Image (cartoon, helix red, strand yellow):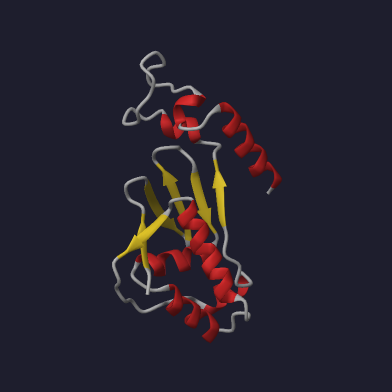
Length: 157
């Protein structure tokens, strides 16, 4: 059984009104989860396993492919380095049935870079000596080409 926790070495998170926002303090990119994604994220970071979350979702009427949806969601969060594996623990799963039905059992992680430069302008971040507290695009961890490619990808979504 695999458990997960927030990758606190890079990320900080806040949940407000059922929506999680996770900010990468190294890149300035932030991520927004939909309500069901937030519920799954909270259960994971509270010690619930993916198997227990899947079982809970099935018990409230999730479609047959919910296990693959949950696994894809967790994999996406791991790939974006939002979550890292944690030591095994157990926690009771709590997911609101009405919210899950309203979300049509959809789990989503949206990536945003529109506040990237603002978030990185904070003096705690490393910046180039010649630019002072206003980092150039290249100093935020991505080349200009990578940044352009990421922006195009976000516009297509």
